[in-house]
Image (tube, rainbow, N blue to C red; front, side, top):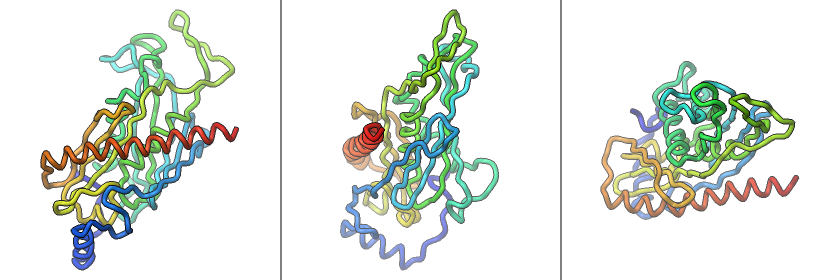
Length: 277
């Protein structure tokens, strides 16, 4: 599977310049090797969704909408609600994105975000069961890439978690398997806050939050998703070249630190929004 969306080529001179900078511990945009670009969080950007958020990570912009409907459980989890994640690479986001059905890149993006949410048990799916084996709440998380400038995975996952945290549905009660709605609203049962941290390896250098220029010349990509307790809950390797055990151990330590910083930014932004009300 491809590791990133199909990218336009980079000139030999640009590549040489980027590699020389990295060899000296520098990046083309002035960041340190483990620095994230600044990101801006907006919530409730889609009026008709149960929850929504938009993240601007540098020039990368991703919007996520959450919709909750009543449906059937999976056969192997009859007492749990259903989480569905999809991703769309909108053609206006990049000249390399094409209209049509989801390609391998959008499928991979959705799966990595889904895996982080699912493996960390971000949603308490058992609380979304209405009648075991028959009726549950289905939570759709739809990702739309609006502007691509690198690191879609982290931007998408940050927006997805924020959208889930802001989602509201009608309060309800279940008696004898029957669903009754109330007048007030309630939040989704979010119980964990997984945050991915994506690295790319260029020659022997690992860098965090790659820009589009850095993704164009990367040898390998690694995404580590860390839960709220600082535990690794999901991992995704991309690119053609290998990573050493020492590089992975180094990346895990960096990911624990960076995920905590980004998680706090999201939770602080939501807290600040609540205080404005």
